[in-house]
Structure formats: C-alpha cells, structure tokens
Length: 93
Image (cartoon, rainbow, N blue to C red):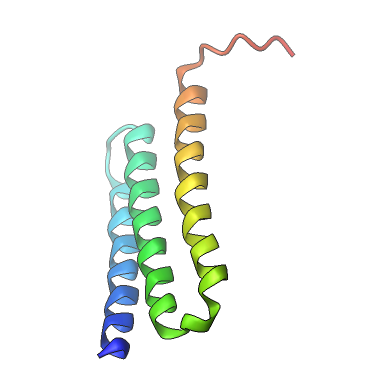
C-alpha cells in the first residue's frame, strides 16, 4: 500500500510539472505564465518529495528540509519577481 501511495504522489508531481509547463506556450502575459509555472512546479516538487518520504522514511530529516526549502524559496522568489516586474525600483546603484 505504501508503494502505491509513493508512486501515486510521484505521478501527481510529474503531472503538476507538465501542467505548469503547458501554459508557457500560450499568449498570456509573462507574469501570468511565471505564476502558473511556479505554483505548479512547487506543488509538483512537493508531491514528489512526499512520495520519496513514503519510499525512504529513514531520510525524513533531509526530505522535510527539502519540503520547507521549497515552500520558502518559491514564495520568496514569487515576491521578488513581482517586485522586479513593477519597474518601480528606487535603487540607483
């Protein structure tokens, strides 16, 4: 049963990866494409890491650290991209 859940999480993660990549071919704005890609990539990566956690539970500290890092990094990256896209930066360097 654990093997089935593990494989199911990994497959769901791969589906999220492809689902996030597909809209890049559309005609919407770059920010819309990046938002969809980053959300789908984050969810897909987290699902894959959960699948690995079910598969190799003895590595739980490393995999939990990977989950936390994915959540924090992608959230911060989203804010940075939004700030950079406004073009209203007051940095004169």
